[in-house]
Every structure is written in structure tokens, then in C-alpha cells.
Length: 194
Image 1 (cartoon, one colour):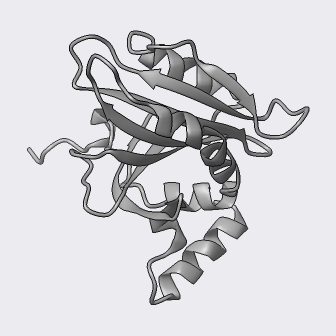
Image 2 (image 1 turned 180 degrees about the horizontal axis):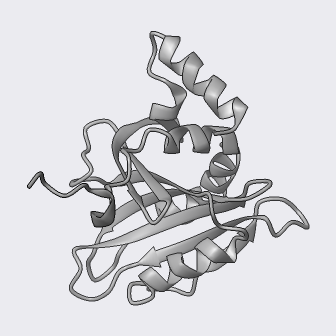
């Protein structure tokens, strides 16, 4: 773990307020830690708005850390592939830094007929140096109907992109440190005594 991330974790442990890693603020709403998971070396941490839960949410912040990724495509391509059947509108790709391709945001609308809601997602993908890719996403759900009103998402898109881009890679790494350890592989579990 980088020295800076270790220092942030120690400072957070000594503070009486909830650590910054356990909270993310978007549009003045404080999202708090709700769940985490590890799989194949990657970490997922999710944060919910007040009064919401991981099972019932209208707004969600997700953070993923992929320490073994070497380029954005290592994370973006599987991310899009996993959602390809739900992409309702062609994704929009936005640069977070002029002239740079190591920090991008993708805007998605996810949903299909028969689903109870349409989901708006703006996801920022950033390369960490010397290796690794972090992702932070802000999602909003809209009730599905004949005329789905997504004007809130269209009006907030640029503002949310800037807010996600302002979250440091150090905070993303510290948030990923909240995740539960990855379950042991079967080969790592000792056999029961004979």
C-alpha cells in the first residue's frame, strides 16, 4: 500500500468523525459506506445517500480499484461488456483533462423494456501511476414509463463529471481499503483434520 494511503488510513482511524474514505459528497449529499466486495484482485465499494440502502436506492456512488490493470482499456472494456445488453443510448466519452487519455468519464443510460427503472451513470476511469486503474461512478435511477424524464441527469451531467474528477486517486484508494478481504480460494483452505 502506498505510504500516502497508509497515512490517510491512520489519520482516519484517529479521527472522531467518520473517515473521508467512508463518505463521498456529490451535489451536497453525503453518501456513506454501504457495501464492499473483492474479486479477482479488484475491489468494489458502494456508498448510498441518507435514507437509502444498497438494495433500495435512487442515488449510488460506486468505487472500483483495479491494481493490476495497466491501462484504462483493461477496465473500461470489461465494464462496457458487462452492461452491453442494458445500454439504452450510445455511451458518451468525455476527457477529464484536456489532451489526456488517462482520465476519462463515460456517460451511460442503462435499461431495457420490462425493467422498472432507467439508470443514468457517469463513471470516471483514471490511471494511477505506476500501475492500476480506479473508477468512481455516480448513478441515478428514474422510474421507467412511457415518458421518462431524465432532465435532472442531463442538467447535472457536467457538474457531476467535475465533482467525480475532483476526487483524488488517494481518496479512491483509501475507500477501496474499506473492502472486506477476498474470500480464500478453495486451494487456500486447509483440509479438515483427519
